Length: 241
Image (cartoon, rainbow, N blue to C red; front, side):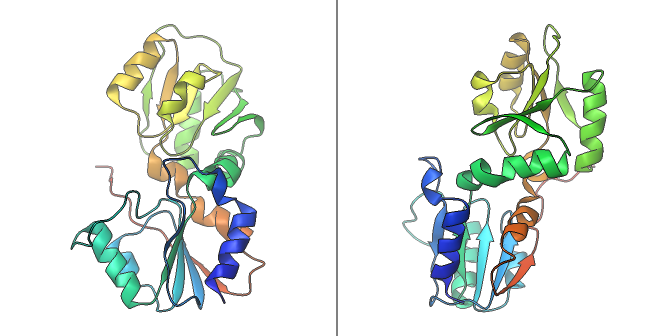
């Protein structure tokens, strides 16, 4: 199948033009223009790429390349790019455009099994039907298969009718939050401190765990294509000990 045909289908599904200005979604690596199968993955790691078959299209959520490359080195990005080139594989990333169009919605509805009450770009909200924030934490641990979960409590706990959520790393959106409870990943110490002082409780749902559903989500949307689609998962760099 032509890579360009798949790209056009993806662009209709989740327009690349809606990505954030700093993002690098789209075609990151071209091959000879054809592919025999599609691999879906949140990210890429070298051992994973070694297992890919030749003449494939890989679609990731996070772009392997964010900034311009002046050279290709023997490092994380360089080694993966060289392996993909040797195997005549193409690479497309669907990042912030897919967050906006599908991923956040999929996470709330399919993973958390909650109804979306409000949609504000990258911020989605669902009803707070938990008796307290600790009950919410237990619920999140069960849905995300987490042994432990990190929480920063608001200085002054307030009732919140809605719970705000953004998969991945959404702490920069906290200033636009219309809730006193925020679920997101990659929460830093000073951000948690600031939000606590502003009476907002933050629960770290982790970056990997909140977005690993990318492959499942996109898989459901690619079933019309006449090509084999393979879901695979890059390794999580963090381990519980």
